[in-house]
Structures are given as structure tokens and as C-alpha cells.
Length: 313
Image (cartoon, rainbow, N blue to C red):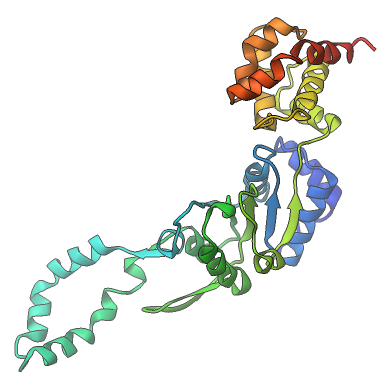
């Protein structure tokens, strides 16, 4: 296994920062262990804390292909593993019609004709007619890829059981072809928003990483990397405001991505200091439900004032 990149926790933190992803020490430690032990990572946490972005950044960092499987209810093997190219198979049967006719031309009866065709059926169920989907594609890569199985909690439990087979041996069995093993084991990330419980069996296969909303200092560092033009004063006010909003009883707390978007919006509007009016005008950037806006309204002025005071201390 190539360890040139994942040589220490500190190296990971510094290198990911150059890719505009700020790693906490716990994230960097999990990455270091998972890569060097060859284990998948199950990443859980609220929506918008950077779970998917972690896998994308890892692919950039390694210079590897990112192969993404987006999970959803009803996802099955044919969409995740492979399908047969039925159109190509049909086309070839038309092209080879004369050859097929010769094979069965002098057959004594239907049974004999079918027996003769069966001797050649492997031609149409060979790798040439196989359409790899994300899981098989990751196994077939010559160089190590990053496989992102996104929002695995949205898939059915039956699909989760199927994943266990893949993650245990990193090989799959295709009845018409045989067993296909990984040419190079992918670095696997599974993400979950906790819409349902992930099975204990799948958890045992993985190293677990929980990414919470960041503390103020870490969020400030993230904004500095993503929006370097922002002033220290406005950044401090923005982070204080967001941190307070997340403590409210609301349906969806602002994500890191939405915080970054808000910072960009405030810069675009040439705002250098928060005030209740501008906050109200731009709330749609950070709050996506009207009931959340209503919940914040009665506290908006106090929260804004407290955020501004952070820069007056």
C-alpha cells in the first residue's frame, strides 16, 4: 500500500488545508488510520458539515478518480454494480444472424437447436457486454480510486446487506463471468445523515467518524480559507451569529456551506458590519424554512447585537 501521502496526522491537516478543506485532528486521525489499515470510513453528522466534501478532497489530495454512488430508496444491484448492455447484445445478434442461422440450420429439432445456441451464449455474456456501475467500476480501476457511497441511510436495508459482501472481500461474483476482485482496493467513504439506523454489521466493517457543526474557531478558519477577502471583524460577527442560530430550536440549522454563501453575499453587498436590517434581507441564504425564520425573528435583534459586540470587546 502506498503511504507517501498519508504519513502523519499533521501532514494530512496541512495538506487538506491546501485543498481548502480544514480538518480537525479527529478527522485527520481517522483518515490516517483508515488509509493505512485499508478500512472504509462511515462518516455521519448533520446535513452540510462537509461529509461528501471530505471524500472529494481526499480524491484531489491523492490524485485519484472519485467514483460516486448516490443512494436512494429502491437502489438495487443493477444500478450499483453492473448491467448488461442489452442494446449491444441485440445489435450483435442482428449482425451475426447469418452465423447463428448456420449453427442451427441442420438441427434435427428445437431441443438440438437450443443446445447448439447454448454452446455460444457466453459470447453475449462476456466482459465486452458488461456495463459497470459505480461499485464494479471502483473494483476495476488499475489505480486506487476513492469510492463515495453517499447517503447510504437512504438505501434499503437489503442493499446495505449487499454492501457488506463488497466491503468484506472487495470482490463480486457475476454468474455469467465469475468472480471479479479489486485490481486496486478503493479508499471507501460511506456517508449518512442518520435518517435511519445503520446496521451494526456495516458499522463493524468501517471506522466511524462523526462530524458535528464546527466550533467557532474552526468555522472561522474554514471561512477564512473559503472567503479570504472577508474582514476579520465581519467574519467574527458572522460566525457568532451562526453559532447562536444553531442553538435555537429550528428545523434545519445553517450548514457550513450556507455560512460560506452568506459570507460571499455580505461581501457582494459591500457589508462590513451586521445589522438587523441586512440580516433580515439575507436570511434566505442561511434559513430554508419559513418556520425557522419566524422562530428567529423575535430573537434576531438580540442575536445580531451580541454578534456585533464580539468585535467591540
